[in-house]
Image: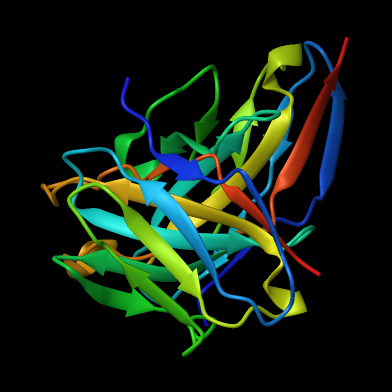
Length: 113
Length: 116
């Protein structure tokens, strides 16, 4: 079954501390993986995707196929990073069609001053 | 910057009533989606729509649900006879043509549906 697991509902860190938001997936093929972010009272927006290998707002995420993980990391958290973070999987991408997104339950990141 | 819009932001209805949730996708986008999020739970895919027909739907999307693109701009989700368990945030999303890489799905702000 296709599944995305985010084990932490809430992650609370102090400003300047490193952050790692965990994401594990279950999928037999080669999925496309994403991190979406939702700031308070704002819409879901794409933060980054594994295929582009970008660093956005200081965040990076590496796909580890052996561990089926796509953890989101930032070396120094900022207060403005406080938000809900959702890991998502698109199982159909490499099939040449645009599939639906399968989301994890989300992790609320709280960065304290 | 163009955005996906949704109306209303909050809809309250009585159980058994029909509701229509409206979305205006980004104008040159071709793929449209509905997702929902029950309070405290994950965002779940409902249906995708392309070329004026449903391309994929989840098991949640039963006969009580339907989607329509009545004109060139709106994309609607209808729930024929609402149940208490339909109470959720409903998100519309869209993206453009399939290229040689993934096209980002742009989400609307959501409609909160409350069924009493």
